[in-house]
Length: 433
Ligand code: UDX
Ligand code: UDX
Image (cartoon, rainbow, N blue to C red; front, side, top):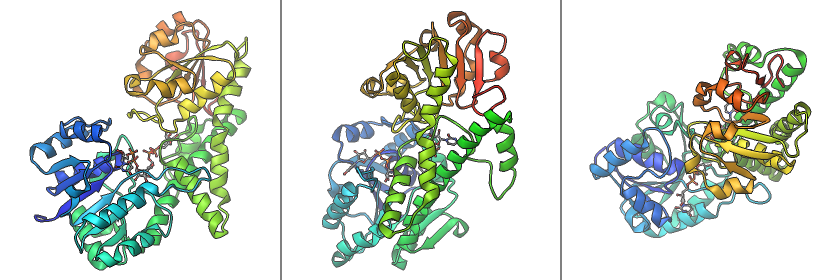
């Protein structure tokens, strides 16, 4: 693929992963980000975010001079294709805020040379790609949609082993160039209109949210019915029409994508006069998860929630990341502190979490799990960090006698807790909550 030069705008989870993986494929890759401090750190080989495999790829890309970072769009001037990976957060009404995408596209329109391709990886509402294409048509540039499906903490793996590469383009030349850049076999490359590609991304994330909320509601029913959610979902997942992924109950789903993408899809539906009650219900179910945990603790703690000492184990939105954006764990903590509880929080990556974020939820961060759990009335497992299984639970029991352990992720072994004097409750399990 010699001679093809690629660019990336936005060195976040999506853009940085894309840039280092394209450089690994031997492509000359320039990445632009408006954050000068981040650009300096990346050029010095500091990956900034925590993503398995990223440090090695970043450093080898820089060493091989296949990869560079800049704040100036001029670095992208001779690119054949530029991937736009800037955020599209939820606006007040749930609609995606497209200002960063529009600004990136307009700036690219001024620096790129025809017939370069602008490829939108940012999650954008249906119609955005075509609208951006109209802006750049006079300059001989084309715009395609190539939505990103990678998961944080598996981003490099997902880039190298995609289930599907979706290319939404009206221009055969642009589609061919993107196919070439990705180099993925035709069986996993899905070509379609920009509108279908844009909607496919929202549809996928919303479906995952629906599946998760269904699992969380079923867990609730299991606890009342004396059934075990693990058995129920194991059985469901064995049916290939259902599939076993995304059936693990928890404290609710979060992160930087599922909440904003479900909101944006509902907003798009409203604009089009199409209700999506399944997606609305998934969000409603998710909204009550934190309350469900608070009311369970209210019921179990003899002295009730105000003044109870509660330890949150796990603060990130899922394990193996430092990301706390829209973290269900913090939502739960915020609800507990609002009810008057004193909440201390431990997370294996506490040092990478902005203390101001914890402060806003009223959580006192403690960087030792044994100190964090000392004297607790309740210990709530909120993120599925595997190392929580290996804690010395008998020691914890000695320092927090009789404490309730609420395992929202069903991570711990009931047997390991049994006999220590702690009261274990799983999520949707027999004897659980
Ligand atoms: C991406 C987006 O593609 C989003 O639409 C999708 O839904 C999820 O993935 P993400 O990679 O998570 O977002 O964003 P983030 O980690 O916040 O990084 C964005 C980067 O873009 C930051 O480094 C920021 O400095 C940079 N940025 C932002 C720009 O360079 N220009 C801007 O105008 C705005
Ligand atoms: C998601 C999509 O999976 C990815 O395809 C998309 O491109 C970006 O958004 P990510 O935000 O990294 O990825 O997180 P994901 O792994 O999907 O988890 C989302 C939330 O669901 C987390 O809070 C996680 O803890 C929760 N979850 C996930 C469960 O509670 N149970 C599960 O079985 C799976």
